[in-house]
Length: 103
Image 1 (cartoon, helix red, strand yellow):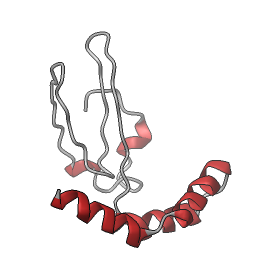
Image 2 (cartoon, rainbow, N blue to C red):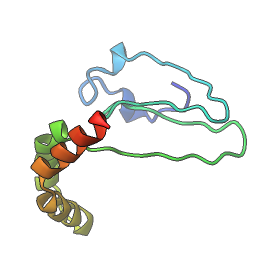
Image 3 (cartoon, helix red, strand yellow):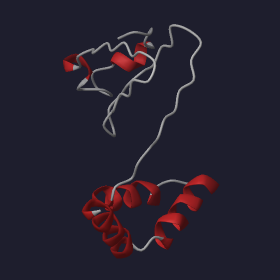
């Protein structure tokens, strides 16, 4: 992996899949985009002065899993995220998404 790992990161009890992990190095040029699937461990090293934009997307298929994870979290941020999830009408969201695909 590109960065020094702390000793506990390689602990096979805490991280049983670590021994099977593969490193994939990607060099991006100006204007390139890299999609990293949710839950994928990753690290970034900027080789020169850079401006980066990261976006986390929560799709409706992940809604229940996100709500379950947030239910076990404490603090103001977790509370605000739970409240935001409760305000979204998934049926309206899916209808709007379907309409945009047809256009």
